[in-house]
Image (cartoon, rainbow, N blue to C red; front, side, top):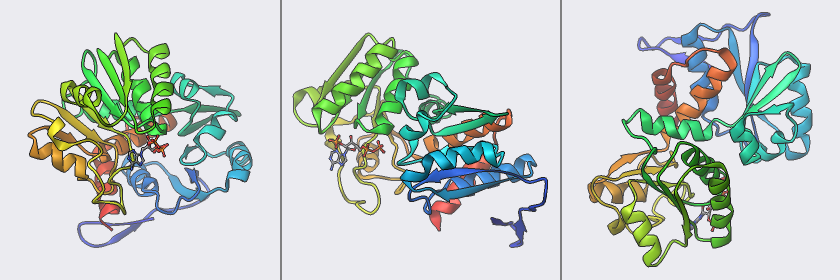
Length: 299
Ligand code: ATR
């Protein structure tokens, strides 16, 4: 929990009897970048809080959640594989967590535990900070796992003109489409596989293309791109939620085609900043969090 300053000194977090605790639960969790990102933010905000990583076996999730009350933690972030189980253990859920059946942020308010899902809002903010929105736009979302569900829900709620959901396994895309249709206002929600004319048309005509698959993620950095690079074009924004590596095969292809690219560090920083807003009631220092995240990624 040290930070090396520009002078090369290591500033320790002071831990004392006033220190309040929060953290992330996952299994495994040792590669989480959240402690680096959040502790940098907490220091900057002058909060005597310490953010830790807790490796919690799936059978012990309920005990870990009970400890939020028992130990009086500020709250927790929740990562794979616990997001769904935690949703069933909350006193209250925000709209996104309720619709998705998945929680990534627990806030303790006295004895009540409130579950939020900040992944989708984090995605929207990562576009906003680059001057983009999904409102009124044609959006193609590739993938149908948990990340794709969060992005599809947020995109549908934010008023995209149309949403195309592309996935290798068609039935999973159908399930995400139902969620987007029921909860959103998009005039058109379609599904397709990753190949063929329908997929090509969906990707080529989109204003925003979001890859929510694990294709090209470390260690398979040469895998992909998930769709042919020739389908991309100038004027599009291409987002890849993968942050390791930051430049995936898809983003490299998008740059070659003259599209604008947004890598996965944007969503990661903003979902964390929104969690911290829920815990502290204050806007988090996004640039400090980003710097800490990029430094941790470079290690
Ligand atoms: P997460 O929760 O992070 O979204 P996930 O639920 O494991 O992760 O989802 C991974 C997504 O990447 C899925 O959409 C998966 O496609 P399938 O639904 O067909 O399994 C997609 N994916 C993973 N490897 C892929 C590959 N080699 N080609 C195409 N899609 C792939």
